[in-house]
Amino acid sequence: MTSFGRQFGLNAATYDAVRPRYPDALFDKITAVIPAGGSVLELGAGTGIATRELLRRGLRVTAVEPDEAMARELLAKGTGELEVVICDFEHYEGLRRSFDAVISAQAWHWFAGASALREVKRLLRHGGIFAAWWNIGSITDERRSAALAEVFEETSHRLPILFRRPDLSATIGDLARLLQGDLGFYRVAPLEFTSTVSYTPGRFVALMSTMSEVLTLSTNDREKVVERLQETLGAEVIEVSYLTVGFMAFRS
Image (cartoon, rainbow, N blue to C red):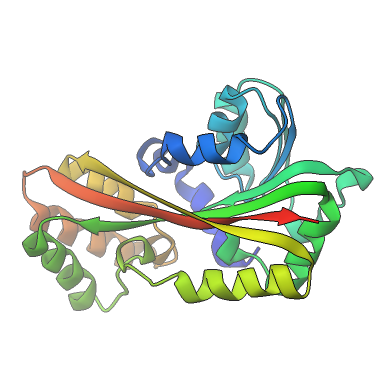
């Protein structure tokens, strides 16, 4: 994981409180192809937003997370058969274990392409699955969406990727071709779900404060962005539409 990926622990409790969750239907689809009580390796587990859903469904989870503050939050709230390993995935040796599934929620972009995928394959049992997904947000009110973009433009910073609506189809397509072509996964199935979340202005500003594009700013710049967001958003509730998109690949 890159050094930028280690910034989230600066605000771990807020991250866990305000980051968007993932639809139940996504976990239903994934757990339907994992044996009951099966073993899952989660990469870049963060504070355990996805981890807790897997534990709730009776799975055994080994969560790899390099940031100690994030891992502490994960341990404090995770219940069930949970093991937390504080290290970079690149340094995780797995003790020659194999898993029924390897997953990465909102984190795979922090890992190193083909070499990380080869390691995923090594850690998966035959017939196991690798699943990765991301939330992409869009403010439903176009006026407020434009105002958000203006705040980041006037402070010379990029709008957080969560709200830039990136087209992940090419990235997922490239991963699918690599998994099926070079690595011998026999099927790659798309994951796509939608949901809507309403935020008070304060909660939305807190969400923005957990974004890597904000966390990596200097203290002065970070305070400036947060102040301008508070001024701009006013008192109205902000509705965000989320597209949760990714893939599930089956190891031969």
